[in-house]
Length: 398
Image (cartoon, helix red, strand yellow):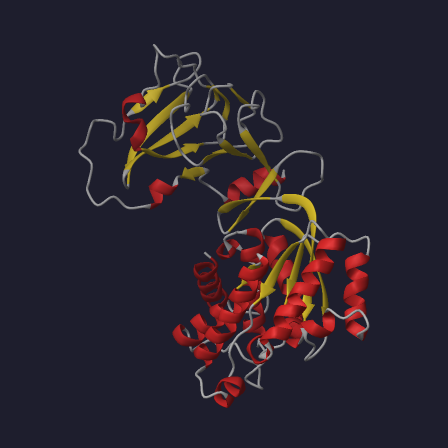
């Protein structure tokens, strides 16, 4: 019932290849395929029809009707075999139950949607390894393909691969549970940024739990010291039974350049400890941003302050082979190009909710190498503001 309901929300089950997104500068000559209809039913009784129609840059195939398609061989090729490179979209409507041999085997698209009625394919219906997003519970003879089954909510862990829709894009559910540990100060804990990051991740299909050790003004040097009150907590977490997939280190706001040697040494110490007790964790640095007070004190603009912070983070990251979450760089992009969005709290230093949301987007986009524009978790933000921040974060991360 869930699938049927979803199909009403998605009236057209279509594939759009990357090449189909791009507009063609020249119009193709009419080759006679536009508007052409073919009886491809198994019994050749017109119960299942394939329609061809012109779309930008090529053609779209629409299969409609009921039942099974016929098989196609090398001698009896699919009707569209002569224009295969020009096939940009395929829509398979509900009612089709089975796809025959070689029907789409030479069509090079990114993926196909299969309606809930389609429960069987031939081993050669598509190119080997093709990604299939199915609304059915099972698809017979699909071992040659990468099949994902629709699940609107986090699915049960039964060994199958699942997907869901986010802003009309197919997103694969990642059922492996993952843990992230943020080590930092108020730039991290304001607005409970780790929780925002967790919500964005879950919305994108990643089963992520975000933990943190944060206290105002604390430095990485203190966190690297097990005799420090909070350094002890970090030490205990690293030695605990919890296995962290990601550990993100945030230095105190200006210390990356005012006390660079201390910053460098602290990262080295923490990296050694993490490698000893959490040797599968990916370690990254959380680059912070420029702000009015810090920039004025050093006669810099806010973006210039951020550039100096960024250079220090890059230097340490390169030295210890770590990745960087360029939150500060994204702050600068918004500061310069979207002044209507205020990323700062009343003190013009700490992040507003918008700033924390932007920070979370960068963390998730960098950790999972994913397109954060696909998330529909906007938190407390207006949709237009959230979409602007998603776009900026995506452009900087990638």
